[in-house]
Structure formats: C-alpha cells, structure tokens
Length: 259
Image (cartoon, rainbow, N blue to C red; front, side, top):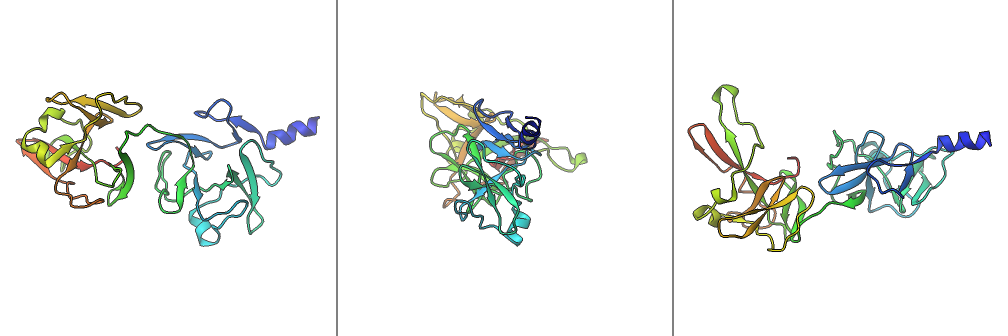
C-alpha cells in the first residue's frame, strides 16, 4: 500500500487551475489563458502544441525539429490517465500525448500565453476556445497573429498618443478615440466593423455605439476597422497612418493580438 502511494505520487494527476473540474492532467501540466482561449501549458505555463504530421503513438518531430519543438517529457514509470497517453520516442524517451496528439513546447515562446509556435502544421493545444465574433478570425500577417475578417482582410484600431519629443517617441496602446471620432470621410477610408444588433459580446470583446446607432465591434475596448487601401487579404497598408495636432495625435495600427 505504501509503495502504491509513492508510485501514485510520482505520476500524480491533478485538477489544473483553470481547467474544468473533471479534467485530470499529469502533474506539472495545466492550462493558460491566451487570446485564442485556454490552452494546455507546461509547468512554466508555456503553451503546448500538437503537430499535424504526427500519427497515433508516433512522433514525426525528431532530430533538429525536437531541439526547437521540445517534446513534453513523461516519466518512464508513468501511466496513461484520462485523455492522456504516453508514447515512446525513437530515442527511447517518453512523451505525453493528449487525445492522441503528441505535445510539444516551442523555444520561440518567451512568456506564458505566447503563441509564436502556432502556424502551418503546428496547432496550440486548445481546451477552451475563446469567444470570437462571427466573421472574425486570427491570421498571420507581417505583424504576427492578427485579427482579420474570415476572408483574411486585416482589421485595425486607432490609438491615441501624446507626443513627447524629449522622450523620443510615443507610447503604444493608449486608449482609442470614441467611434464617433471616425465618421464622415474617415469612415469611408476606415470602415467600421459593424456588429449585429443582437450581438452578445463576451471575454475581451464588446460593442460600442456609433452616432448612426449601429454597434461596432471592439476588442479590449478598441473599436475595429477595415482599411479601404488594402487591396487583398493579408495586406497591412493601413499600419502607420497618423495625425498630429500639437502634441496630441492618433495612430492606426494593425489589430494584432499582443495588445
């Protein structure tokens, strides 16, 4: 009985902070909030990923790939639990898999919640997708993961700034002007992302009312817009447009998810 207790301590499973109450996970694994929603994370709260080229019980990420995409190590005396299984890698080491998907960290992630490893055949190990308005997606642009329309047109936000020449620049990501600040000719060049009248925002998303009575989608209180100068999906030509009156101005920025 004592030996059994010690063994269970080695492979202890726990209810991870932020996970559903009935989700058991290997010791050291939990969940982390990201803009995509809750993802599986390692003991340092760094995002875990799956690889589409893996097959059940077999990792296709070996050699130099595994130096960048670090396998989530499982104990040699570990046992499967719930949706978690253990596979043996080509070098004999053990790796955790969740619902049949081998899990990996990414050396390019620097802080909890980073998703720099997302893209191509690599997917963040999602357990609780975040709310996203219908017709909005996250796609990669020159500015990283970016909010776009479902067909890939880049979304933007207008940021207020105070110019201080002595400080050599402008702090990013201050508050956004009210939607009514972009009307008339401005709203022709910068098309507001209109929400349905019965929209039910959640999470970091809200709606703000425009002068014409139409609700506009906002993310973290920043109203979102399309730019008429973008000719095709993925264009980001709206980045960097700015106005300055005295030492107060506004700056248009790609709505990337690092805000």
